[in-house]
Amino acid sequence: MKASLSKLRSIKPRAVSGEDALVRYSFLGEAEGLPIVVSPEQEGVVLEQWIGSNLELLDEKLLRHGGILFRGFGVNTPEQFHQVVGAFRGQLLDYMERSSPRSRVTDKVYTSTEHPADQRILFHNELAYSNRWPRALFFGCIRASPVGGETPIGDSREVLRRLSPGTRRRFEELGVMYVRYLGGGLGLHWRDVFQTERREDVERYCEQNGLTLEWDGDRVRTRSVRPAIRKHPRTGEEVWFNHGYFFNLHSIPPALRENIFASVSQHELPFNTFFGDGSEIPEEMIREISEVHDAVGVTFPWKQGDVLYIDNMLTAHSRNPFQGDRTILVSMSDLLVG
Image (cartoon, helix red, strand yellow):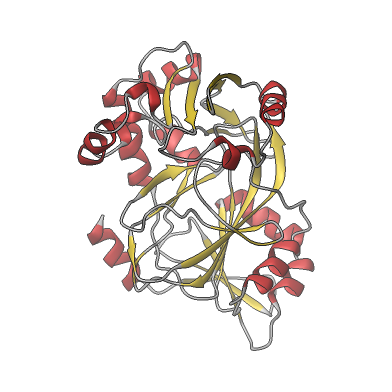
């Protein structure tokens, strides 16, 4: 992985023909792929204005490549990032049914996950465990960490193609059951997950979105069963779209798993996954899914002012450990409901 990252860093973006004299298009690697890079061809290009005039073109490129990296436009503040995101004219979304700590920066703009910097965050599609998820996902680099902190991305279509027939068939037939235990000391409290202080709000949300719940004092356990594979609403392509391996016990590094079980039982884990019928997902399947994601993943260093725009169903993302200060903003739009 380190060797491939070093090789990628040494490659200069390859220019491709563009339809607009104000910008140029290129790729990070030697071949066309994920993401396509859009950079200004001349000084003074205001990104949000250019986006507003090229929405159809950008939509076509997003559906083809799965992600667009805007680089060199100087999007250096939360306010500028908000303007760029708003230029796409999608309805920006609040972060509901959260699974990681984050803070609100401006309206509908949040910090990326605030998990400890020394931990890797595995590949996932945002809110794939929910009945409500965004199609569009935006990341803005306000400050790049000096060491690490990349946001690798991977083609969810290619993940599905590379999985073994047996693994795909099992998940396709059974789906994924998500079990979350909220308020137990590890992970988020249900007040943070559902953004409310009222139990009745939690119960109403769960009823409306296909979750069952049981209260345990001031803690709550939720269960839901979702598909592991979904069809993209625009392209009709099947994509691997779930948190089956990200939320699974077997995806936790052994040393960290041992520390967790020193303080809680498996019954009190903040999240875990099973097949939709409640049976265990074999560890070897979790390992296979992890290896496929790593194989298709594309890693590149952030540069201050970058904006990464991905189709959340076509493209998964992760986060590498980092050192030093790092500020990556996130916003979502285009709500889809299962």
